[in-house]
Length: 294
Length: 281
Image (tube, rainbow over the protein chains, first blue to last red):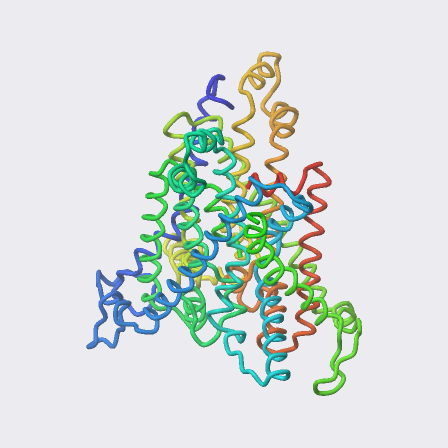
């Protein structure tokens, strides 16, 4: 019942209980990851054997490879960063262009285009992955049989991963930049033009500064979504797995607290990103929304 | 001129990465290999799906489990959304909202790892159960249907909480007060005022959660193990393991059909437009 109406004691108690149980449900899985990253035992399982930093720093005597010495893991983090940077750059560019296209121009087929732009969000990530894989390998075969060209980048690998992730991150970027551009007061631009500013100057001194927070937010979200993507990536990955795919493979092989260590790092990084974005006064709803997509 | 410059990236993106790949996928699914490098148009891939009980059972199972997960997510998320929107005030409300969002900033892989550590036979919860004397030996809590459902609800909560909160926030408190003054009880207020008002939010949330659950691979696979039998796993197997792309493409299209079919049904039942729903979430 709402706060302005009388609420019996049992209802208050039930509410508090529910919130408590809900928060436990949300945070216990994350808390156990953090705790067992420091357990002095080869498996991330109880009982507690004492505190250690071996899973971060490594311990040659005990044959433990810590996160900071695990070249394969570190390499996959770097791969993820490279992929995410490309996806971010492409998505912000195309998203901004799309926002101007949809908010500032009218043309035949605009309605259809606006629906098409949302479609990537409704297609399961696995299917985005296999369809791009199928098209690219068809193109590679064509190039091979027609011109004798060996187009390696069309084979499963990082280029395809970037394209696959970009195919739906671009939609999120478009939505985020459009939302901000829609609220822009165009009389500001008109005033500047009346006062003799060139179009380029207006864009640089008025429109762009206004859009800046949205662009930064979009970049952060695009990066996060790419970094965390699994479904689409799994279908397109080649010999160099990004972090999520490598972690998945290791989780299937068996448990090691090194995975807890790297997860703890990811949690801290995401928390920092979330906090800095929220400080910017933005509601991260849509962003986080999309983060699990794909 | 400007229009052409802006149209190019949009059309390139949509044609090269969405439309053409799906045409290719459709072509793949409607052909059959008769000899090496020889293909004929055929419906065989789809026929196999319907004649092989394993395939369509997994398909139906995935659909039912996704629907269950969606319903459960709604049940869990609704009270929280209500508390955020109507009970908690000011800072407490926004704090609770932010706290609800935090786990979803972490990768799904990490979240699944947390559940693995909690639920596996040597994990935290089974050993807690032994210590409390509830079970004599540690029990395996992974690889059950219920485990998969818990994992799916956990990953989906956010997509339900956000649209629910925004639709409940727009409900005018005075309507509830009026109903209360007129003698309405909790249940009838919920049924006759709150739910009709929140219907768009409920639909948006359900559509998105169902879609994401249906297309999920990681959570059912890790928490369900061999028992997960999720349809996306069949697609993966056909495409990556068996290299039978024709069959995999047909499976992909069936999943896409189910997904869009349910979205369309949800929109129809609630009388909403696709564009509005997507904008809301």
